[in-house]
Length: 487
Image (cartoon, rainbow, N blue to C red; front, side, top):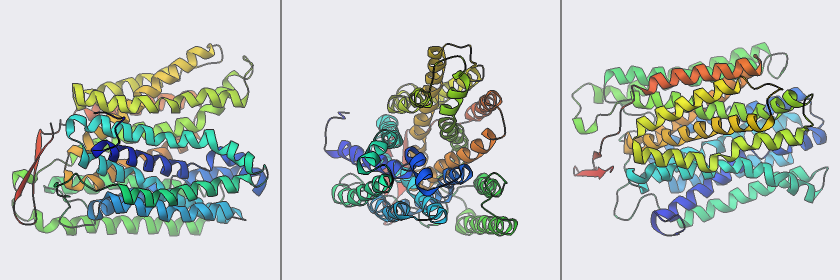
């Protein structure tokens, strides 16, 4: 696997992680510019907090929707269309004149966060399982670095354009980049290797399951996603946010749960006929796998987003009286948590390929729990180097676990990989909302202990995870069997 090549599957890997990188730049382009935006638009702290929360709202349903779309139409057209369409709210955010305009544009921009799902399907179709862990890890790790790149580049770009309104031009540049790469991506990739069929589900709109038990498992797995959206709605109505009135909260919650019942009805409708008779063994898979991986990703990616958002302030408040530390210093120290993603996530996928996927994920989740428990003891009398060391170790395990999750996901059922990745990815965003809310209600020490306890719970669930089979068999439209080697 020569990552310095630019042909065949390696070309697809590079083209796709760059697409994911750009989507993350666009998704988090506001974060490093928030102080400039706050000053320019005369925003309050509560309004800033609302913008940050709105950034995580739409990706929950969007990742499920995009999972359906990519399984139906392929990654080539799905990623290109997503990047092109999401440039529009990016331009709208740059041109906004009121807080309401900023809020709606930021809400719509959350859709670009669903791009991750598309790449999982693309990489899973191009790489064999002996390499899918490292390939998905490189895709996720290097693509995720887009948020860090935005933090490093956009403030300087905004100052180059002008301190007062420069943030608008910097945001607009990311929109132009997204729009341009949409055309580049479409011209340079294909959905599958030559002579390999693109496997699609027979019906779109919900995942096809293979047992009555899995049908109820599937419906139950969607409940926390809608509950997270209700939690966000409540948070936006609290006195600190004060964005939604009581009537709006009732109306939005009613809409959320009507959508849930519609979704549940769709799940039952799509699976009713196929579950009325026996299902061939070659089609069978366990939905339990999807549920367990979803919880693992909620615990890793979801908690990571919450921790990244609080680390600068946590370091500053912990050390401002005992160490000569500024907010800039605290921000630089906390960046170590993000930068480890470049190495740790690919390493997690690589180790999964080498020593076993379930075993690797259990090791990484154990390390995550240990890391969070250690972070709960951080105090002002700790030397800064020790705090940073503990933070980096915790970050390595968290992001290695993310890589291990998506070393398994593409191997469960090839034809519905997009929808599987959509549910797992949506759980990551739901986790971010849940942990951000919990963070606002607890001290840092209690917050880290809570994350450690949740990690132990996820570890117990991973014990029941099954290793993927060595090959899968699919029946094509003409009735022929296609055997796909996984090792």
